Length: 255
Image (cartoon, rainbow, N blue to C red; front, side, top):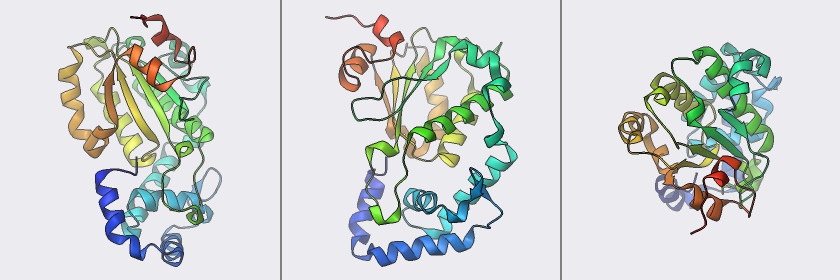
C-alpha cells in the first residue's frame, strides 16, 4: 500500500513539511484544479475532501500529479458510464461466478474480492461485458471501504484497502486473456489506485509463469502487492477458521 519503500523514504524526507496547515493547503490547491462539472457518485468531485486526499496520498502530495490522475479518473468514469453499470448488463458473466465479493473479511478486516480463473474462457467471454463487470465490482469494493479525511493523517488504515484472492488452480491457455488483464490493470492502477492492499495468486501452475512475465511490465511497483501462495496458506494466514473462500477450502488439505 502506501507504505512502500518509495513513499516511506519520501515520508521520512518530508516529515517536517507535513503539518496540518500544509496538508490543508494541498487539498485546497487540488480543489481549485478540479472543475465542478466533474462528478464523483453524483456530487462534485471537488467537494469530496476524502477523495482529493486519497489521490494526493497516492501521488505523495504532488498536487499537479494528483490533479492529472484524478481528472483522468473522473473523465473515464464519465465516458465508461460507471455509475450506470448494473449486473443486468453482464448477466452471463455474473452467472459464471468467475468473480464475487466474499461474505467474510480477512483477519485484518479487509473486504475480499475472489477471482476463479478457471471459470473465465477467452474464447467465450464478451470483452465489453467482462470490462463492465470489472468496473462494477471495483465500485462495490468502494462501497465497503472508507476513505480518510486529511485531518486523519496520511497513514494507511486497514479499512481503506481490500484484498484480492485469485485462484489459479487449473489455469490453462484458455484463461490467458491478456486483452482483459490489460484493461483490469489499467483500471486498478489509474482509476482505483492502491485500493488493493494485497493480491494473492493461489496455486499457480507452471504454465502461469510465462503469462505472468507478460503482465509484470504493466504492473510497475504494484508487483510488490502480488504474492504467490497456496490455498492452505491463504486459509491459515488470512482468514478465520471456516471463513476462507469455499473454493480454497475444498482444495485445502490438513497436513
